[in-house]
Image (cartoon, rainbow over all chains, first blue to last red; front, top):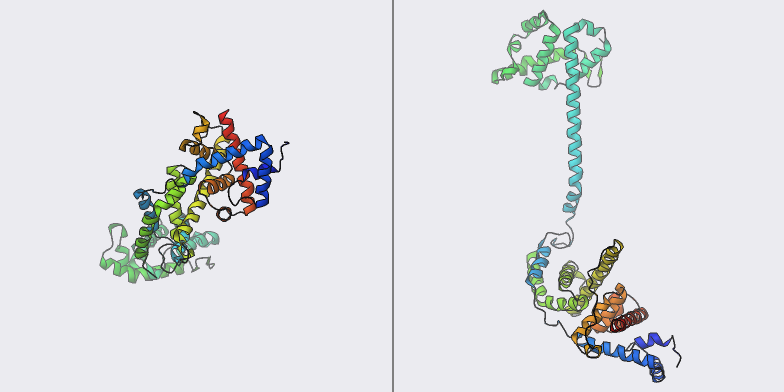
Length: 239
Length: 176
């Protein structure tokens, strides 16, 4: 009998429930007259029989302790879906998890910015000291741009109300710079602020010196600001 | 709502009770103990995470069976992709070739014959393999296979036909 291509799919669907009654009858009729299809049908049925023991195999597997331990380890991990009593309300943890790298990047950026500003201010101050030492205040007064730079450098110091040993050290060096080599400016400064002139921050600041900084030091800082006509960190009035 | 620790303890009891059943199902489908253990582990983690979806009106084993079978299907698809990639890179696959050894007539009545058939099934595309294993090894109804694989009954028939034909032809080729 000529091979019927349409019978091939039906031939391979032989188990109960796979074919309709009409299809089943068609297959049976066909294999009566087709040796090859009958062989295929027999082969398929033998395959099915050989698979039968597998359908009941492995029914008595033992509990695997390592598997149980692995699952329970995962289950006991804090998780958004697992240990949150209200069912996934650990939004704060998720937010913090997201925010952590952002915060680290922000902190790093801030640190870099501060470091840059400090180094920039230190350079400006050094430039100011150099100018004061070589030219004096009168020369600076004739050069508004440089005075502006000096004012900005002064602005980088803590304001007079918060003067400390470090700030005073810088101011003191400014005064010495203004005085030049003959030290006359410093002498005038020392006559006006006798206690402050004796404070040397390089050998440490005790309580008495801290008191002097808080009184004479602040007064001196204010006067110095006025000397440079300091107005704001971004601008200096022309002398 | 119970405390998480209490839930964990209850879940561990559930795990101990039903793990042998889940492992048996995974072993029948995958025929590989390492893979079956991993699938069972994944399955129970899914059970834990999705427990609110479980309908207590139905047997727990029915729900667990569905999860295990779907995890097996995922694994089969993953292994198939990995094998294809490995072949693409010019490597050998670790899938052992079935060998003919002895009289086929008696083999069909032996466990080895069944193992060979299942081994041949590993060459099939994932969907055909899954349909074949669920129907011919797991003995699921056509409707159940359709539900588990997520396809229509007609599609199950088509995949089953291609799977059985491919296995039959491969087996005949082994016989020479």
